[in-house]
Each structure stands twice: as C-alpha cells, then as structure tokens.
Length: 386
Image 1 (cartoon, rainbow, N blue to C red):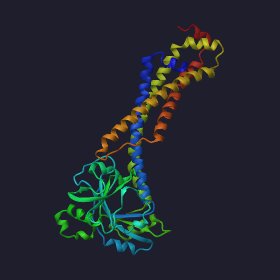
Image 2: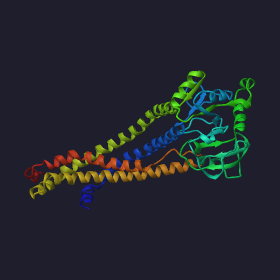
Image 3: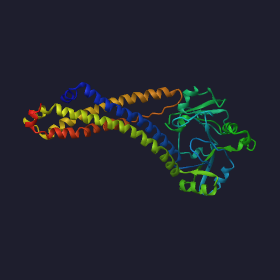
Image 4: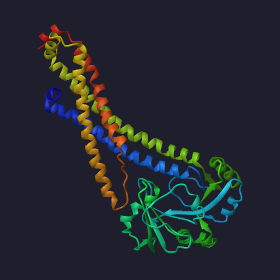
C-alpha cells in the first residue's frame, strides 16, 4: 500500500508513465501475436514436411504460383530406389481473382489419395468423413472456411462456380488446412485445366494434370537425400525435403519477425525512459524523506529496495494494462475476421506472461540508477535539501 501511495503522489505523472509502458506492452502483444500466428503456421508446415518430399515444376519468383505438371511423373518417381509411394496433388487459389493478403491464402486442395495410409500429418473431423477415391462432387471444408461458405454437412457450397456437397468439416488445426477446401482429384483437374490459357489447353489433357507430387520414402530412407536425388534425376522439377523447407520458411519469416519485435521493443524502451525520468524526479522530490529515513537507520539496501519496488510496480501495472488492451484488440480483430476466415492474431500464454514479466524487468532496470542515487545521498545534506 505504501508503494502505491508513493507512486501516485504525482497522479498525472504516474498515469503518463504507466501509459508509456502500457503502449509498449500493447505493441509487443499485438506484434507478438502476429509473429506467434506465423510461427504456428510454420510449425504446421514443418510437421507436414517432416518425413516426405514434395515435387513441383521449377519456377522462379515468389508468392503463390501454379505450374501444371503431368501425372506421368508419378510412375517415374515410384521407380526410384527409396520411394515407397508417390501421390499426385493439386493446389490452386480458392478465388482465382484473390489478391495479396496476410497469411495463408484460401486454397482448393486435392490428392489422388494414393499415399493416404502413409500420411503422418493427421487431421481430425469435427463432423462427417474424409473424401474417398470414388467421390465426385464432394468436399471437405476447413474450419476457417465454414462460416465463409456457410457450410454444413449435407449442404451444397460453390467452388469456382460449381456445386459441391459437403461431406466433412475439419477440426481446427491452426495451420494450412483451416483455410482450405478439399475436393476430389478429377474435379480439381477440371478446375486447374479451366484456369490455363487457351493456347496451353490445346496441348494438354485435363485428366493428366497436377500441380505437384508428394513422395513418401521407404522406412529408413533420408527424405533430404531423396529430394536431392530427385532434383538430380529430374532437372525440370523442384523437390523439397524437410531441411530445405525449414531453410525457406526461416529465411522468409526471419526479417518480418525481427521487424515486428523491433517495433515493439522500441516502444517499450521509450516507456522505460519515462520510468527513469519519473523515478529520478521522485528521488529529487523526496530527498528530505530519504535523509530522514537514513538518519533513523535505514540501510542503503533498504532504500534501493523501496525505489526498485516502486519502479517494478509501475512496470507491472503498465504490463498488465497493456496486456489487457492487446488481448481485447486481438480478440476484436479476430472476431472481425471470422466471417472472412482471416484470423491473423494468436495470443499465447508464453507471450502474455513474457510481456508482463518483460515490463516488470524493464521497470526494475529503469529504476536502478534512481535507486542507487537515492541510496548514496548524504543524510545530513539530504535533510538540508529544499
């Protein structure tokens, strides 16, 4: 209680100082929630790629792009030593006109299901069932696409202008499947074929199209080495194993994450400077009080603890307030994005606890010099201070 009274002796100054910490923690929570969401997506991709190799046509440039390939590659892949099964896949944008957006775009995914029994990345179903090889005109909807498509088991949804009956709804995975609709492979081939320019269509057979392949190695075979062997044998294709995927996503997210936390830390440091200023002014205003306490026998350590406790209190209050505001903001932003399936913030317990602890530590560090200065005051001179 005494700490509370001391901090709020100058109410306006105390509120402004706490507000500075609050803004810093708010920025850390919001920016950190963005980074946590990206980390979760990356971890999901890492789990998916952990024991397999994906193959696609080689192309240059960033972003999401589709280069059709022939399913004739599948038997050639399976003829290689170390390959157990190769499965043809298709992945295209759900909305052909979709522009750039934060996070994972909405996708249409399909597979010939030949490697289904070997898939280690398991998904569970909130309702319904998975697709079967003989399905046609059926669809499995990701959790974030349900509201956007008004999907429910047995209902009909529109996918690129075509009607599909919903047979399954996925549980939330917090990874790529949440933003996807899975349809039968032949239906996806038809959609992919229609996306191609007329000049290209005339030279292709729609029933032979795919956009990639998933290669499942035999037990004991290193998927990274297998990916290199595929690249060596098929120069027109790009095979990606677990290590290559990890390198790609690490390089692409490192700069963003650094900027995100850099902005938040700068905000916090500005708040820390305000704590230093407030505590320094507090020491000067209470010089006579410090002199009285020291003349009555208060040790230097006791004086230091008193002022450090006050600075830690300022950091703690600012941290909790900033966390509350950040939580409300991310909650509101995710609620606003639910209708479009765009939830870009993820406030984890480690981020919440870490933000408050960081604010407290910042408060303590900011109070070190003022506390040390107070402890070194000469009690006689302090009593004479006006």
